[in-house]
Image (cartoon, rainbow, N blue to C red):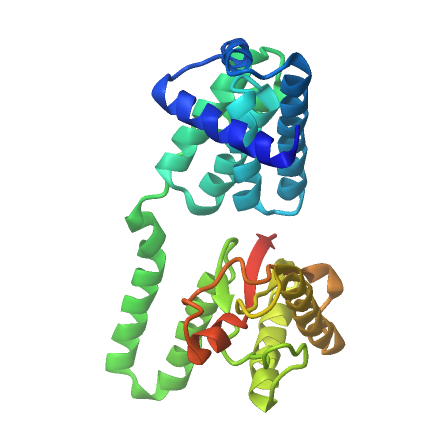
Length: 300
């Protein structure tokens, strides 16, 4: 069975699952055979689904929850009762809950973990996840903002009453902003770091000024680890864009480490033209899409 037929089968299964909820793996196999698929072809589809699970866990090892989620969801089209895929999705939402405290992520993580345990009662990681999240409280909007709001109110009082402390107040406000930036999951574009189309060389002095600000930030937070992500416009072949975006991310990686940032704090990756921030419909937008982003992966 070629890849197009496998993809067509997955689409057909998705349509059937949307129409008939709660189908088991055995029921899906029966439907596949009724559609004319042979036992050999069914096993081949299962192998493809297992590959999705393995890729999902590989993505998780590299802190790439978004792509891992897609792989696990694809695997569940064929293996709706697979404990590894179910737990993988639960673990993704567990990470998101711990990073952002959203109640929906906690609920989803527990749902998938319970489903994994129902399939495999001996699944220790699913049991761990449930025990870990059971008593965790979601973070409300007030919990997110009360500390910085309180600090800003105090600083505002000081600013109104004592003019001579203006410099100190500005420093404290900058510190609050930087503390917010240093949270896990924070992601920002290095706005002054641009590349000419087809080039991997840093464009001008403004690029270096922007990178030196990042150097200073990383040196202030030596236990922080982040990803340098390279992106391109849509000019050229996909494979070439992926390669050049990786090379651009590596150019930034080299600059940062050359200027004193520890290599252990950094990973780099190219995404090609797969994640544009703007439509690639004019030269200005394409220039904006040829960008470098920095995402915080871990804060100890």
